[in-house]
Length: 196
Image (cartoon, rainbow, N blue to C red; front, side, top):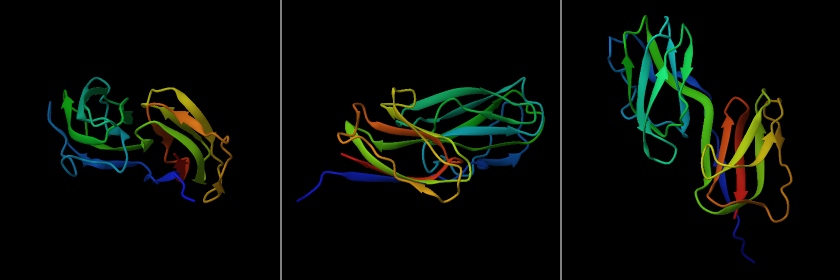
């Protein structure tokens, strides 16, 4: 007897403040130097811009592709000796350019927030096996996109390397426009998802 159950394994790396561009001085209206061009993260992620000085009066233009591979351009207001984060998830970053004159060194990296595809078509989630980190958090299962309807939420346990295999109703959970996972890599080490 055969089964139509398939699986997807997701194990995203934790955030890296300089994965996209290492800390360096950036000139007035100049582009940051990317570590690779284009920069492609392990999964679509929000991008962070870390300012060593007060960049709250300027912005940075991030250009790349979103989680669906569509072109996206976003203006991100700089931080005051801190971190600014994009609103969009990026599957690729082509450039990051200062709009104004950064006060000190600037770096760009990947945040912990990950948007991963379970399956990009109609599907039913049948089960999951999650490995926790030391920090508890919430995993959100969405239909169609990062802002799509929430079909399920699952709370992880703050116990490093412990695992969970929760029950899913017999018929599974239906995702009409595709199943997607929205979570922080700080709250979950990995997850295996079973669907049909």
